Image (cartoon, rainbow, N blue to C red; front, side):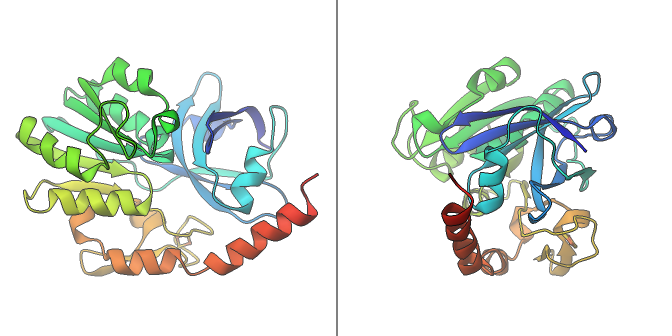
Length: 277
Ligand code: FES
């Protein structure tokens, strides 16, 4: 079974998981994800790939603590094994020489967008990163982004790190200051991606988002990740996860993501009552 090499807390609500999975590590591309099961009885959940090392045979994912499965993952330690670590899945992000690209990264998306930042810079783009965190102590990998990006800014709801507030406002300003911006790529919670797409819509700047619906198999078989984009039914796991943010049915996505909200709360309560020491 795949063995955990590293599991560490990056900031209070975000953890890093590095897994020995040579067959996955040899094929990873920016924008892809893995499906993980934390234990034999657990559910399958998608985690964006945040890095990989083909030589070491390792794949790194960064995840937000949200429910039972991510709490189980956060309780694992180096040397533990997990029953399922499948990937890489999903279409890789489009990498090309576009010009100026603005990356909007929030919570787990700071990790998920890192391979894209690196690849876009290597492809000759001017790369500007806008890292969104609810507070200064929730931002991580600042130095990593500074090491490859031409400019790194922060948006923070506590106005720390020199920010002017939540991401859409500084993003609108960036579109003017960095004009012409060839594309914006936003990865993070659904609301951050939605708000970023709304901020770029008036200027018509192409905006790519990495959708995060509920997933089960990750291979287009179960239909759990169904969403609507470009007016058509899509499966985020095989048609995405990247989509044009101006052509996503956001209302449907928000509604489908809430489908199991009550069950998730009950599951978390049961886990905390019965399985935590
Ligand atoms: Fe099953 Fe996409 S996760 S179809």
